[in-house]
Length: 433
Image 1: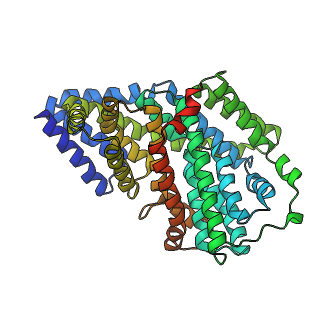
Image 2 (image 1 turned 60 degrees about the vertical axis):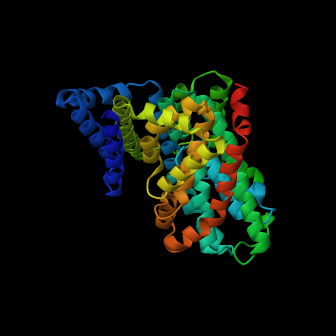
């Protein structure tokens, strides 16, 4: 009977999501209703009363608003404004320099942001107009920035990785380090796509390098010292073991605040805007997390998690069969759901299975975030695509942007395949810690 209730609850959850009910409300509603059905109204009220505090009171989760604050201050105070110019100065002599520069500028922005949407929006405003003026097709220019934005959640600090580490009860720092590898490989794969496009379709992406006389490399690199200093302090302390991932968030927020004041770029209106956006974003993430925590407890009470784990073990699925199922699940969910919601809906079901199968949870966390970010550029609800549409509406339609991300999606699938085929290249750096 309990397992049946679990299946009904999962089915009800996806029905609610299909009806566009917010993820948090769907998770909380199904969990409350399921527990009330099995145990009565009083235990259901007890869960809905106790779970928010038990989830939010996690010390590790305090890193989420801190890293968010670091990113918002860095963005609104203009500490990241010179990243694109610096990348252009370094990469100007190669074909497709503007597109490749935008991809690596996204990687640099990701190191102080942790959000795909913010990365795509920030770089889109700067890079797309210049790329179109230089002869890139609007579709390819927009698609490259939409794809480059996905690196925002791969290179730490990544909000998705922090929350995953809390739910999976694994080292956030090790997931961070594994994410660096995949983030760099992703940036390189996107750059290869640009180079191939320049070679095969110069009408879409011009082959000619940038005019070297137009750029002062030394000045461009000096302009990004605030970002470099912030990255050095946060990552240097984090990876040397001087402070934990949780403490790194507070150090990063304080560092961004002090650098903004020292450079006189941080005003009170900017600080107020950064605080408001931090609170709004953190609140929206936490309420989904509360719903996922309730859903995990509900599934545990029904015994569905154990049943599915035993079923997978009894089915004796090969490694590649299991991974194919996981990839298909997340690619389909990514077409219709935002990454955080997709992760919170699926982790209560999948984590017990992976523990049963002995799959490394650090490696899976990196693969999971990569799969979730692929969903950010897949139709019909590729959120990065719609962000780019908003910031560059006069250059490309939604359809054109989706067409522009197709070659980058092919690169993503290659990276996913390599991640699954060679887990060691993700786990090598974490193993050194």
